[in-house]
Length: 232
Image 1: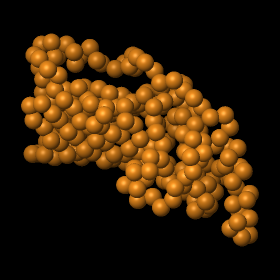
Image 2 (image 1 turned 180 degrees about the vertical axis):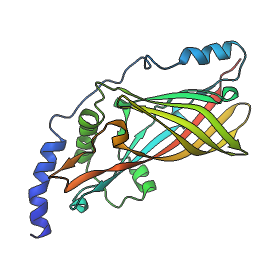
Image 3 (image 1 turned 30 degrees about the vertical axis):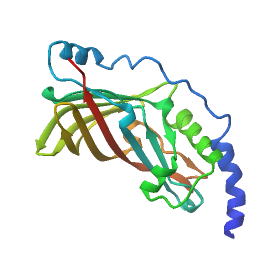
């Protein structure tokens, strides 16, 4: 079968499966109930150094790659958060952050370019991908947040290995993550990259036509965290 005939058959199925009614979800106003904000506010009150994450200077990027025998008909995707919120207590080797998943953005042109992706989805494709991701993959109405907790570090000069626990889709996984850290009295900056599998978080990777068009289980995640010390 020629490629244009395959596209003619696949495109309507993709549209119906991914679009439907585009999901509009209000991001939660309050932080997650389990987020330990009180710990950091109390530590600051006791005179210990506490840094607040700056969402405007921080970024979480997830690269999602296509798979299946008809992968050439699909797109790789970049999912990003620019609303990372939380605190860092370097004296305790601890940090806690969260992301409101309803605020995730998909396929920003600059991030796609940085990832080296060679295709560009249309605006309607992007909207459909985001809607499908929030509704059927992440189930944000049941699991509105992703949480990131750092509970320990092994440091050598500007590099460190962090013990990072990620809670997503009701599941928590802990792993050691190499990171680069820059810190002074007023600012902390952390850059890290790690690999995750969707199935580790009880997420079924999206697939269509018996897996001929699919999303790979493996994800690549990049973190850029910028935090500023809370004034005394």
